Image (tube, rainbow, N blue to C red):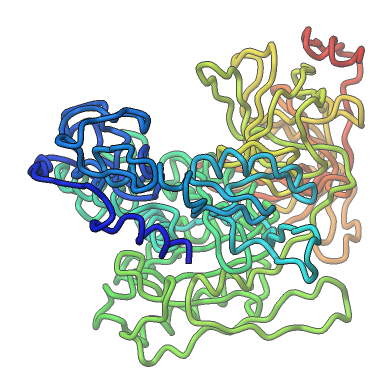
Length: 635
């Protein structure tokens, strides 16, 4: 109805508009962007500064074409009828542009096309609505505000007139998924393609990567470059450091961790895997590639073992490069690989019935988001859900795609009630912000204003802000991958492997030594007291000395077989006292499982795994407290 009134007023018969000016043509090299027009307030294509006149940069294409090259005049400017394009039929005020006249007419007709969905007000311009929308807060979502227009579908209309409108938004469970596997099995390509198909990366970015990759003669790396951002990674064509990115499925908000497959960078893979709830093991199905990965020195075998050792209890096996088999999309090859992988994941400790196995093509996108039409023989994957308690019913889950397999992950239980433990993955110095440690919250909660202690440095400071995927949050809970800004702390003071804790609630301390149950998996000789391999525990990689072999025990029953043995070898389990060669912070497995399990590496392979039973802390060292922490502590 209001639009009809507006159309009637704009009728040429009732206005004194005369137009003989030619419509200016857009320059050929003009790039159009989507934004709000300064003049009409509508979401449309904007003309950037490349158009020539910077004064027109806020005008949409339609409004720009209705103008000459002069800058925007105010609606109060009175022009002669000879120079005019449009005139108001109410007050005879003259305007050069139709859109300017429309804005003016709203003052006469009361037409306001942008209503607020939280109250009964309406506005003539969208920018005014956005400004007004900020006055509405939703107490159920920690004061979260957003434009009423953009969240129209998120509001629930009240059952009665005058009732308060509430905003209902489903908060998805957050989980972390690490992508592991042998070098060149297609981990980064598959992950990048998945992100692209799920909307995590736009087409323009992919096209840019494709052009850059072709210039370097690596056209097939366009999806891998979504995650491989380092210059050395792109030149060598391999992943070196872990990369975290976010996307959403129907059920979960997922942080995906792309881990390196090359054995030279196994430390980075361990850092990434220690932060995950579920692992996607990528296995290449090309002739010879699968055999290389599953061989004695292959990374498929070691990555699977490390994932289980580091506490990743759920796994998906994706048989990649199914388009590169002989013949392409071979059912026989997939069944052969599946049979081999079922045997190995069972040997490591996973239940094969709870592991989804599916064929994919990371490059072509087969079975990633949608079921492929090129594998008529493939009927889908089937798995059982892991029961939370003994006696719980087991659910049968099935699907065809990798996205459905991710949605079938069992939601992990989160230890909110325990004290804060946050192992640092990395520490960054960001200009204008300061020092930003990054890591995953394993237990407890971290929020701005907290006084935290970094162990083993025993350094206390205040948390200024907490961010998750470049968005500020009021608090971070277990499972969240966050970065937090700290005051008065240099990048040199803290580093990867340190553990963050609440200084007022059971702060973590440096560990002098610890007693652990160690199982020797693959060592070519005998291990005696004094042996000093590298221990990978949470994000720390520290050489630890096997100070004393207390007793040899049975792996399954725990029964003591021999007191104070002289040595242990492959297949043996023993209680051993370990002493770190550098300051280190670990916890008992019973109290903090993520900080109480470790892998032992030597000779570029995993030789043993273990869990920590007892720890002896260094309580003598006095910590350093920053000025901000001291000031916040007095409040």
